[in-house]
Image 1 (cartoon, rainbow, N blue to C red):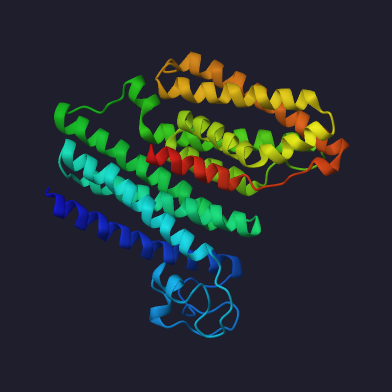
Image 2 (image 1 turned 30 degrees about the horizontal axis):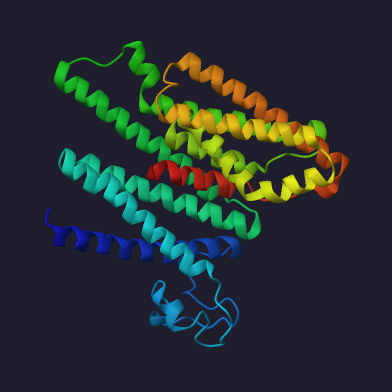
Length: 343
């Protein structure tokens, strides 16, 4: 592949990503307004005028219109160019990783196309869920079910391909224990179940200490979808990373309140979890937790520290409601999943 061809492809994919990002904005807005994503045509949410085609050029229209509606001059949300640019960048990065990388190493195959398109679908769903959760603290079943379905369908395709290859090369079904336990479909199903179980345990622990769920039900479905996409081992890593992201976002404000209220034990527990979680991710990335038993013990210890931190936080909030700093957890999980796709 020549340099010119490479940059032409990258530019084309980036533009496609921008256009998909524009469509994702429609999906987000119409989901929140309970409207069809097809009808009516795109319109200004303030004055209701149908937009002209030149009002819908991704990013460029926002710049040319100076962030204002072409009719009523009301301010256009910065969400639109951000989502478009983010989608374009992520689509391009994934194309380089899965398509160009595969073409260089093994040549272009059907799997190259499948992996790239699958990653694009997952990215799109994660962006939509993150933005609706940020805007209105709501996650829609249609989006989480689509993520779960995408993960399971992809796992079935990969597992089916492995079975077909075994049949054509050896004439036998791969019925050994290793394949039955470690095939992508089993991993996806275990990841889905683990996502539900882990998030529901954490969420329902809130009833014991604060009389309410610690997380919304939507977060459980997001975790289930991430589990179906990545499998149970990577799900745990994604949840750890999402907690770290959530802590980074909320930690400065929350720690200030802990210090102001002299809740030093909770501060210590949070600090211990943060340090251990970082070590866990580093060890996993270096392959030092490849042994399933060692990995499970480390994960259980991590969960214990995390649950202890959550209990202390919930107790503190119950005794002092002013400690409450609520930010939806779904966006942190989506960001963690996006990072894992890209690394």
